[in-house]
Image (tube, rainbow, N blue to C red; front, side):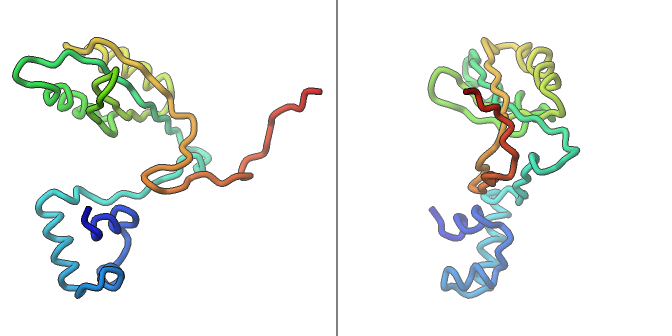
Length: 161
């Protein structure tokens, strides 16, 4: 894998000067590489990794939805992926190997929002055979970033003797 892409994937806020120093290349060469990757669609965008658990008033729920489908002849899985991607609730769509065909990351304000999305929108798509919903209770690590701070929450378990 390209070292420049690895560095940007780890921290997209590195300056071109920092990247050039780390890679031992001229800064203008690094800037040109980044522009080329962006124009070719290799770099699709830059995002912050947000730890929603640290936001007191955040109404943010995520779920991983497993989707088993019956692909259409000559279209394979691409048409189903496009249909799933069109929903604003859908964050990510992955074609999988195994029992289910797709893993879909969905966001909502409440678990009920996600349940209704699955029941009324996702499961009603022609060709969907079954779904499995897994609510994400806590993210410990996301896109390489550690989101967990041991001891940041009080232990509310009861001691039973």
